[in-house]
Amino acid sequence: MMYGPNTNLSGSIIYMLENQARYITKCVKTLERTKALAMHVKADVQKRFNEEIMEQLSKTVLVHENCRSYFQAENGRITTNWPGLMLDYRRRTHRVRKRDYIFT
Image (cartoon, rainbow, N blue to C red; front, side, top):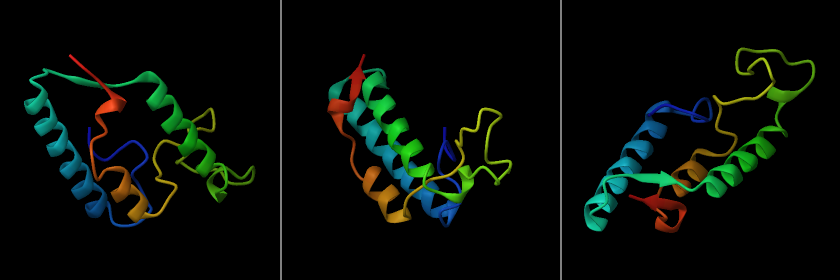
């Protein structure tokens, strides 16, 4: 899946998609090297990442009690926006951390 979740509005979506495409390519090459058929993010890694994103978003106007927008789901969760700098996104997608995945 490209263009989400949490990839919107911090700048150029083209930049975000380019970084995603580069990361996906690295994942495919990792699969080829390991001779695995699939890779799955470990549950604890995903949980920590989501908690970090939610913590960062909690400091933005998007979650202010007087801010109602289409960015928030009914439960108040925001899954559309990247809370950091675009450079932070690039750093996060620069390399595949094999220890974060289960290979099958």
